[in-house]
Amino acid sequence: MPKGLLIMKYDNKSGMEIESKYPNEGISISDESLMAILGLHGFSKEEGVASLTVGDTNLVTYYSGKSINYYVGLILNKHENTDEFEDWLKEIAHIILENLQEEKYINMLPALFTQITSLI
Image 1 (cartoon, rainbow, N blue to C red):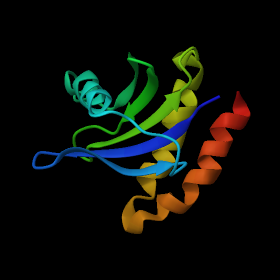
Image 2 (cartoon, one colour):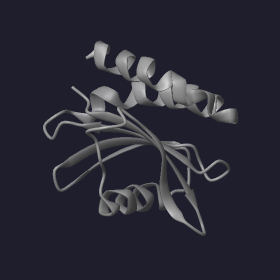
Image 3 (cartoon, rainbow, N blue to C red):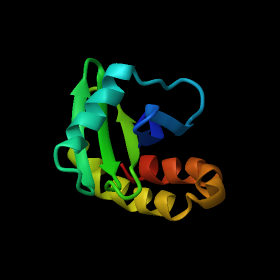
Image 4 (cartoon, rainbow, N blue to C red):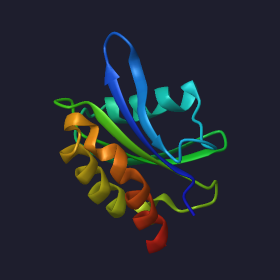
């Protein structure tokens, strides 16, 4: 079962920053993992889904493309298959990205996370 959902943004001045996460407590991600996400999507700079493992952190991430520079990540248990979550993450990422204005997506995170966890 997934551990958490992260919404991240990259900007040239401050680098990769976590904008929001759900649940707020009990999940964390290392700077090393944030840099790995940036590097993974940075090669193509194209919208899309990718997965990676950094230490004990197993992630599947969606990158919006460089026009928005947002990343939506799902933290999984170490032995979960990231392929099972890619389509769902892409769908949920689109909902989040459509609701960035006034941070409307923040109130949606619990329901979106529950939607992903109930599908598996």
